[in-house]
Amino acid sequence: MSTTEIAAAPASPGELTTEFLTHVLRSHQQAYSPAEKTVLEVKEFTWKPLDVGVISEVVGIQALVAVGSATEDKQYVAKFLRPEFPFEKMFVVESNFYTHFCGQTASLMPFQLPTCVYTSKSLIILERVGAIKTIKCVDGCPEEKIEDIVAKMAQMHARFRDSQLSSLASPAGIGAELSGEAKREQFPSAWQPFLDDVVLESSDKVRLAAICERLSAKPQTLEGLHEKVATGPKAFIHGDFHVANMLFPTQQSEKNDSSSFWLLDWATCGEGNAMRDLAFFFIVSVHSTHRRKLEAACLKIYSDTAAKEGWNNYSLAQWQQFYRMCVWNQLAILIVYDSLTKHLVANAKSDKLKTELDHHFREVNYRACLAALDNFRDEDFAALSSL
Image 1 (cartoon, rainbow, N blue to C red):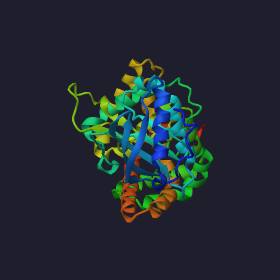
Image 2: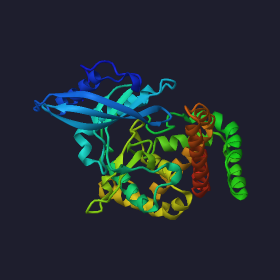
Image 3: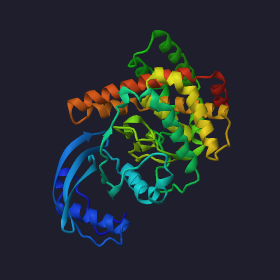
Image 4: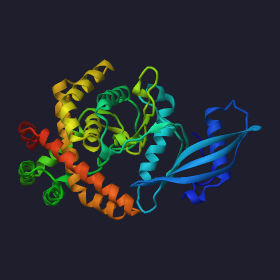
């Protein structure tokens, strides 16, 4: 989508103008419907806050658009980069995804993508998807949706594993930039305060503490874990794959086809270990009871689905080990970054957001601890020590 003739992006919702939005819509029309001669013009618009996230401020825009001699009401969602955090790179990645990646290949996606009408390093505007419902991570992905979501994840990974991804995140995934050296150096002093702040059964806490002490005694194992994940099965991954980044229809289609859900927030997508997405999905957005019930079945579904899509390089046992390593890698990231997440909570823009973020991160940490305990194998870590 061409934005070369559009003025610099407004830095906040209050700086939006009818002129800017008109330029946006005309540029999008020219890029995607060059034969269309009808002139678009935004006559008036209003905006209202929808959400203030960790890195962005999200608003809804309702615009009255003149299409030739007629007028239409149009709705959009605008994501503004919060200036207090240096996350421009993430906006650039998401812009590149919408601009260069999904245009020609969107039909191969096993879920829907919103139509993007404007991208920049600080503002992204999407057409608003109507008649949808959202689910918070703390509420957990509905059990009946989990297996289908995992199957579609596998389809995406397999179909785009050989794509050109140089304009996207490298490494891809939330926390992927944390190096093996940083884990080795910071984990030994960070795990105890982290664990003290997680509410676990005493037996689980004792067992997890013993494993963390073992890792701290041989911190090179953490670098081995990092390398194992970094060199695992490469695919195009979303990197922030959780249920709150999905929009579900309010009514099932006649075919009861749940492929009609939308997947959003591609700010950390790119090439990465495919099991990062699965580990992240289970830890961040699935209740531990549901994970324990469906985890093994989902790995089998993932393996079978990938094979059906032509990605048959790995056995189920290999996928299971890749997954276990990614679960432990995710816990290591959460432990090392715990002080950062607490800083983000403390600097939330409202008391409501502060409470919600605190609840979210505490639940994620709890789920991560249980997932790591369930996926600990002595033989995995014995092998890592020799890497």
